[in-house]
Image 1: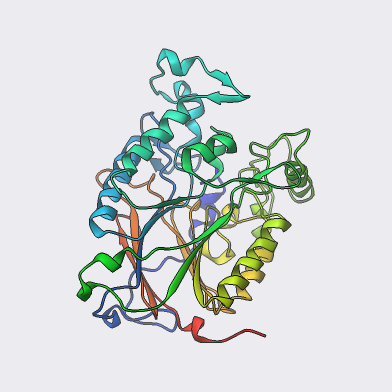
Image 2: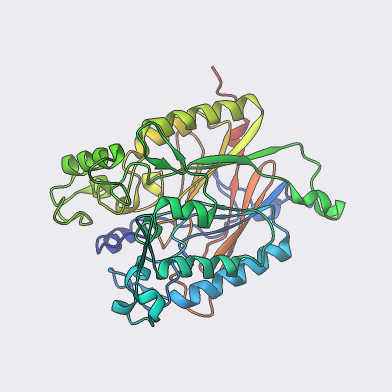
Length: 396
């Protein structure tokens, strides 16, 4: 989540929804099919582990940096027991405070204290912290899809994140690395008891966006085209920049998204998004979109929103027959809206980090032909989302 005192001011305006009996946008929990789901995946976000004592965010919310890793381990064990088809980690796997653990009361050994320069990258506590979280998640032996957020970039370069998390970063013509990708989810239920599995022919595609495509973080001030674009965007929209690049002070409404800990999506990625969704439509696939930053303004408070959310949302709305839902992190208390225009569900998932021991926050999502069932654990709210919007053919 963003390091700003402004977030708390908007929390009261967010709407989150527990499991309900029925509504125009949700299915009854009693309507869940007796046969098993077509796909099941695990979901967690904003672990933000750091080897430091418990503390607070800039808004005063309690944070449990060490417990977060134990919670991730517990979630992984549950994912393994459920034999989920895949796990999606939506970013901020470690906290920015890993870059200076001594300042925050952590123990710094001699090796970590002396940062080593290797290929212009700093080997620091953040590297060990990511390794420790990945080790905790390794009890789950299926595929894990990672995206990244602002907190990884406070510690590591994109090159290092590619090595650590397996994000398939590619270099665009500008020389900037970007980390968006897509894959079909493999149905591991085929090996389960036939009574627990589905005979559906549904094909499900995961589409992972890079919402730190255009941003200040880990972009070279002298040579990065994308950093130059980010500089122009913030200069035009936030009078606090550059002196207080993370401050939304004095900004109103949705303009509060123009802060340095957020980012945007550049045109090459937007074009890739269009092409990928068109391919999915032609192939008869359904798509779930994952990102660190929320895309819909009513699913979060403005200080967490993607800079050019309007452009992204316009594209997604054009493929409402294809897109089941969009899941994101970054906004630690979560949020939800069903887009009135398209019917697509937009869910900001509650953070692992801010759940006090022994609470462990994550979700298991069951995908049926006609609904998504969110089985929330800990502080993650459960819900059932109707997929009737995907039955409408909007192709032209």
